[in-house]
Length: 294
Image (cartoon, rainbow, N blue to C red; front, side, top):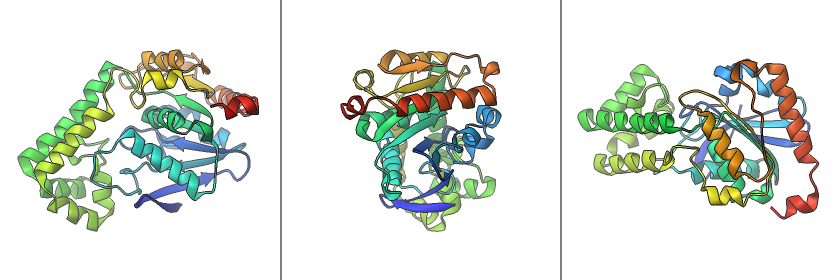
């Protein structure tokens, strides 16, 4: 594993595959978006996209800030902050343009990255995008449970809980969005307990509301997606966190989107790998003048 300091925050990353165009992959896993989720989590353990893609592309995988071994900072984290981490990682590696892939909640920063940096985006795969009313409700509940724990027990007890249980925010909402950083960084944990608790509660409350602000895919405005001249492949999920409607929303808003509308049970490793590679190959062959106008 390697690490890079991006905007003052340590980012753990790995490059899998040493040849071919770069593919920046925003990890799935909700609020536990670590690089290993591409091989170990649910549908990704089944279809194993990294195994197929790394044979033809330089796959850049990383722990999103505040998850895994990456660092974090107490602030109202927004989708633009996740975009900045990905762009900073490309800069660190000396890469100007890349394909993008997001899984689950990782689809949100991928779309936001393409909106912010269309000239750097060769194409994007949006696999099982999060969204839907149930996703919004459960996401807000997660932040509310952490706030309730802080209100009742205080910040020191949050640190003690995280150290005792060792669980990230995605597994135990009581530990909060910075649970992984608390667990891995003793200095950060000490600073966490010393901050003003009322100010902290304002940050957390606004963060949950603004990150998950709609009953479909958060992260970008539909008007910005409608203006985006970037090829996209959307693969729907179908459960409480990955509503099929979220995928169709992206297909509707992205002018160059195609949707691979295959039932979840039929998303096999071989078929999925072949479909992803076929899309990337076609996206890489688009007219340079068309790409330059993005």
